Amino acid sequence: MKKILFATTALVATAGVAAAEVAVTGFAEMGVVDGDHLSTAQFHSDIDVTFTLSGEADNGLTFGATIDLDEAIDPNYCSSPTAGGTSTGGPCGESDMSVFIAYGGARLTMGDTDGAFDWALTEVGIGGAIADDHTTHAGFNFNSGLDGTFDGQVVRFDYAFDAFSVAISTEIDDTGTFDPVWGIGFRYSGELAGLDLGVGLGYQTVDLGADVDVVGLSVDTTFDNGLQAIVNYSQWDIAGTDVDHWGLGLGYTMNALTLSANYGEYSFPGSAKDSGFGLAANYDLGGGLVVQFGYGSSDIDVGPSAFGIGGGRFAGMPAGDYDSYSLGLAMSF
Image 1: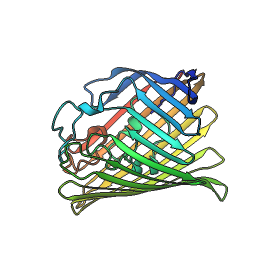
Image 2: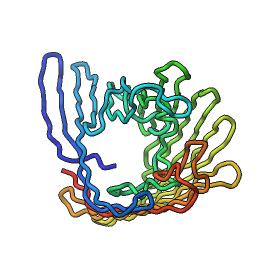
Image 3: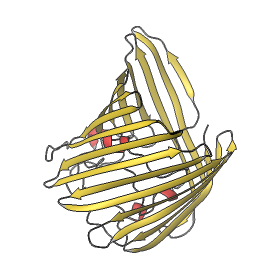
Image 4: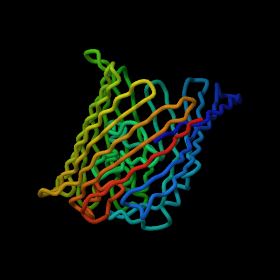
């Protein structure tokens, strides 16, 4: 999603603080959306505002936080779900806030942040759409792994050295019923044979009365001619049952125009599959205004999945073919 809007910066000088900064960012959208998940074509508008706070202590220690005011709630009021994903207490929603502290190549982040698996891997979606149609089809994988198994509050430590980075993460069950989700990830970002190359490898595991594991790999590269390619693969082991996913994304940028396509597929036990493809076209009008078109097509075999994986925005709907599209303007300030 787009997260860049207007940047307002405030510098604050206080005793014992070398520098502190508060930046306000966000985005706005307007357009038309339609699809098999809607009864008819609809108007769409959205606006989001994010505060990013950062500072540096006298000893070089940096610190900061982010908060999305449209979606922020008290994370302590959101209780952990059971193994079936149902909240066991108060209302539970998205808590879009995180806090970090860092020194040199080391960084500790806590809150609504990626686990080590998601941190390491790259999604195959390229470009943008006001309703994310190109990345919400049944074959798309957001690489979230096991993030959100409990209340979504993740602690991740990562360390970068040269072109390599490593991270470990955990998400605990606030009820104390289940063991934490543990994750580890590795990333490489550098130049190889004249190409900008990125490689990510991630793993997460949790015991929900039975072991659940996921391992994944992604590779992405950008060519001098404006072509970008991303490939990822992941496998879930859910109580001894394997579910595989693979995805491919291609994008091409020439001047103000960006075109992209992606395809993904989940393979379930037997011959059942959830698959889909997405298309996006963006034209940058300059000054932060972008025309965006997005289309997604889904082919669902599994229907209401017993594994809680796949389906995109059509998860839980009966087996069948589904489509959605959107056309509009994305605005950054």
